[in-house]
Length: 484
Image (tube, rainbow, N blue to C red; front, side, top):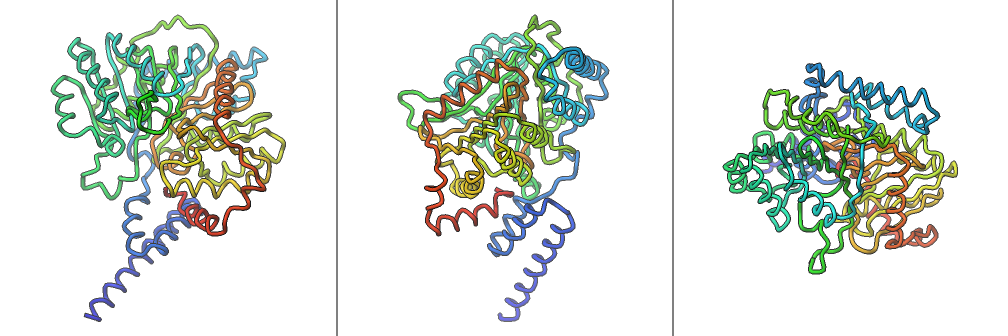
């Protein structure tokens, strides 16, 4: 018995040593490698199991490919035309857009994400406003509906959306749905069969119960996207679930979130984004150009520039991370951030710190308590040193703030599915909208300052007085921030 135990123990440590060597040879970010090694050492056996769930490293371009964009002349010509229009405006006018041309060029040159010039944006505060608008647009759909959600619950709002989709499918509207197999676990086999029996195409992103479970369970499609008839797009932080809707009878805590409704040239970009994931989950070889270019004339002329930034664990360039890094490091006056989870990679942490040290007004709204105790503690470990250099932190008191909005100076705003943490930047498939428009920027700022009325501002001297055990707990949780 003792010999068997000794052999098992030796075998276990050989595995651990081999994994540590593998981690080191992969040359990941030092903080990420450190977190993985700490996981293996601090939590024997459990850490080993979690490693296989959380730490699989994908090869570049393993999954979601954009190569098909290059194979269609219509897509390439449209992207080039949109980009050249923006460049002409920037070079021929004294527009403030010149200040952010770095982001526009980076996203176009390295991620083939074209900016678009003529768009309308409506900011939708909370799920009750978001779903009111969305249901109306779904009911008026004539040709096709494309949906992609991380969470899709089998509850009141979930069933309302499902019933609308079934009825629209009976009218001949072509419907395609993508749900994440982890976030949308409520959509079971029975519902799948119901939807498919009603001519609705639906696929799960990386199904959980497959032989690839151990390798890919940590990789999720966290995006929220709807495109209707190629004319209207919805995105932001709102999923399909009752908890996103605040009603007098709601039993959940108040849920503060933000979405946007967009019409204009950029809707084609949203279509391209949807079909990037669709081609992966469905394995269909079509190019879908007919659905992408259904509406050529949008009759919008309001000089609102939009560019999409997307990223995933197989991205060659982490476009969302890069675009936000450029935005923060080039800010001149204001950096305003709303996020449910704040555990920034070192580069963004230093960018925020340096911005505050240089006199830029930095305000960050976070929940007082998130929906994950480990994440809450990890978030709080970042606050001390940033408060000390002048960053203002505000804890949301009215309920849970899930809004993911970043506002820079007077022109640039970003909204999407991305949280301000490692998981969103490097593990999930995410989608953000970069908006270059002073009017929309002003509306987002007003929203941000309205939310400050429901927040408690942190005081550095009071914050330092937290109990030592609390600080230790926060610091330990921070060790695992890169893999949470």
